[in-house]
Length: 370
Image (cartoon, helix red, strand yellow):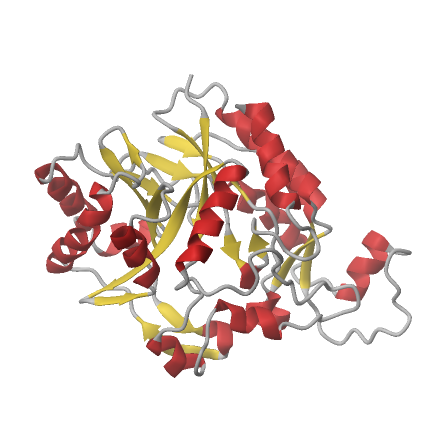
């Protein structure tokens, strides 16, 4: 019986690039938003500060080695690097993957998630400004595949059988705009000695779209969002005062707090209790979220998963493992979103409050489930 393999989404935006310098100011990285975050109400734990790895720069090879060793020690099989290919030769944040390929280090499995969406300035108050537009063309599909081919051929690149794994962030967008694009990928892969591409639709889109018909072999489950959405819809904007009065009264002092701005908060226990994974028409890989607070990016428009804990994350891993246990899939991938999306408060890496708590919860959950 195949063992569960945990894959974690990995964000490469921890080094400056000229485009971010131009858009957001000299030296901008993901840490810029993380470091300037402030609590929006009493008891709001911001900023969230990294622990053992510090405010790292991914251009430093030793950091990447430390991440890989840490991931390996706690049961992560490989990373899913976000890959930003916009078309017509426009690519961003490609340096880290390039250095990983050329150096052969770290010796740790990886694959790509093609983040095929347009970048706008909406997170930072520039909602009408297009920074990088996602486009598709036949010629671009060839150039894109040729760029990916050396990665696909690398022994570390994650494959199912003789098919390189490629996660597509928005499979519906590309299906509507250029349905032949990924078919070109398949034919080019076969011309280069592979049996095709193992296409995985990401957790962004709904599970009931019909992915088999459009050529996908797998879907990363959207179940966590399905469990979370009803709680958002019940009270789309609950004030921090109301939340903490109702949920944790007596644990947090409210006497001197001035609650002028609403923040959207849901109770993590309720969401995790409602989490239920279901099969789709292709191999279905459960997706679990250790934590969430994207107010460093979005301010009072952000969303917080409140009352979270490593114990609740372990419960998610238990549910995901139980779902995969009897499945006869080519591989049993358990997907974590994410390894290091710090400005979303969505991390496995150790922070100063929880230390290695979420990594330990992952390892403990995996030890029970296979």
